[in-house]
Image: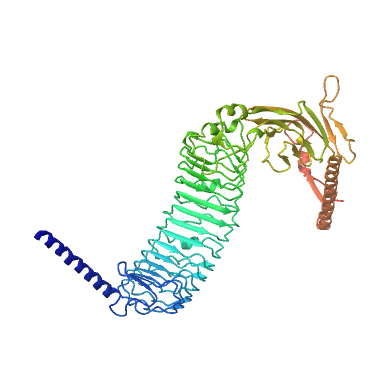
Length: 613
């Protein structure tokens, strides 16, 4: 009994002392000098003072010196002066967001050596001078977004050696100095959004050697230059979002990066950036949603060997070609919802059995034999919250995949071989320079794709452009036919079930002569057959005649000019030479021997005079 009473009394004494100590701590924190500021809320346990939305024009009096967390957001503060917070050396978090601060004096946070979070968000700051952040050697998070800042000066963050997160978006930024981020040795996450930058600040970013995540949102940048993100060797996550003017990503833009996550969304890209992605072998997550990418070609993504998730939502996608994901053995999540796909064939994937999540809803899907593999896996694959539905055939329109019965698959999910309506070889004759239309329409399930093979074995498809092109309905158009366009064209209609062909012969008549169909012929007599008929004829049209005449005229004029030149040279030399020439000679002996007649020797050489005319 005595022991019980002793324990009760001991417990009571301990409780009393705890209460006394708690009151003492509260007195030290709250009531040591002026107590908790009027209209603010204070917590002795967390040493926090919250003066949120109190319409205070200045920093209130009575804030305990031991305060660690100070919230002055949504008030009427207009300026931060040096040593405004000098009495709070233990301050760790300071929130000044939502005020009307227009200027922060250098040295305003000099004494806050242990502070790790500072928010100046949603104020009216236009310029942050050098020295504002001096003394904040242990700051890890800084938010200066949603102000009126126009320029980031060189070395303005140089004292923030331990800063890890920086928010500078929602400003009027037009320029970031090349050394603005110098000194941010530990920065891991940077957000630049909703500002007036027109180019990526590549030089400034190159100082962030430990940057891991870079978020570039809502910018008016229209061009990405090669090596835009140079020296960011540790960058792993890059987000480019809402750049409405961006329509192309050059091949070397991302060169040198070791990204694992890349997101390029809500831009004006009209083609898949195959070459830009070629140097990203460590990429695991790719998001190209809400662009204007219509096709994914086969065999172009083989370098992305570690890709696990691919998102291409709302991109006007109409076709994913066979072998498009060749090499992507680890692809587990594919999201191509809200596009214009009518099918997704099994041959698209390197390892279709590895696919775990397939989001293909809100597409005009044609449920034929090409989708049979998906319907057979419908119980083991995840389709997300919205089930894909058949758009055709009519009997199963609007039916979700999960509700299909096995007995319906063999009845509705079928394919039929293409059949070209024109089943006879056609012959088309046109004049040179005319438009040519070669028709080839085919029926089948799924709808056959039509391509043409030219007489020179060139394959022409609906993506061929230029003077010769194939329309979506299968018609081959040749603009301004030329002689070399003549020959036999082969139309090939194909789908999953097979193919059908049709040949069309095209003859192009020449209109080179001035008189249509009145071509003169020259027969080479040296090239005749045994019966005397010439085997080679050379057409002489107007062009040939004109060229020949011009060559003859040039030759004649050249000869005349040469004669005039000789006459000129002769006339310049007239009168400068002698008209008479004396010639001496010794006559030969009349005998056949070697002896010369002595009379001739004595007479000496003979002479005669010749006059030059």
